Length: 187
Image (cartoon, rainbow, N blue to C red; front, side, top):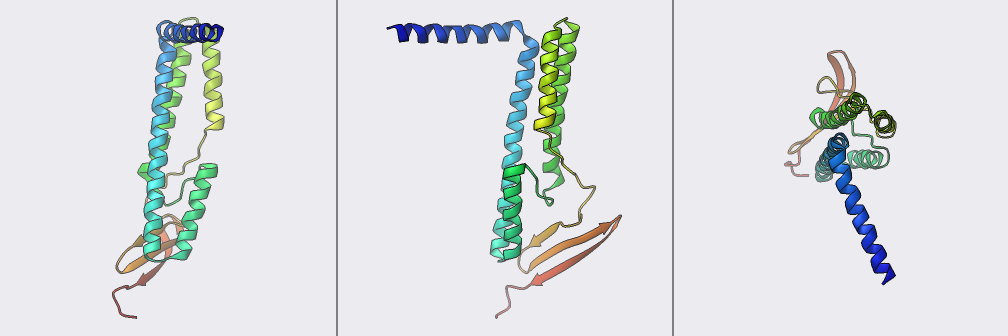
């Protein structure tokens, strides 16, 4: 019986705290909504990167291109462990991450300004610390190339299989290799 009463009191306290927080602190509520939106965007981004790597791996296996499959496996591992994105990832996908980070950082800065404006300096300090922690822990360096054919990018197409690998790039000029294999020809 004591456990039931204790659990009931805990649940009511938790519900009461949630209600008080949302009603009494609209600034924090907006910040929490921004964080939830950011988390959602990150999940979409991770799904897009995974789908991109899956499609590349499937194409490399159809080829069959062992070297490219090994490269994709290494990229997948680096993404999973360190958050490193493949260099061949489309710029539009890379920019999704940058946009999500900028949006959340803006929400943090807005919350600090609002707390300061409403003379809630302690809350402003807490949010500033959260922003600093976010910038340190979740900082991701994403290089968005100015255009296609960046150094070390690989382009693969099917039937005939063409693998176009950019070796180096200097300004508008680049050096590349192109391997063409016709699967239609009898062996």
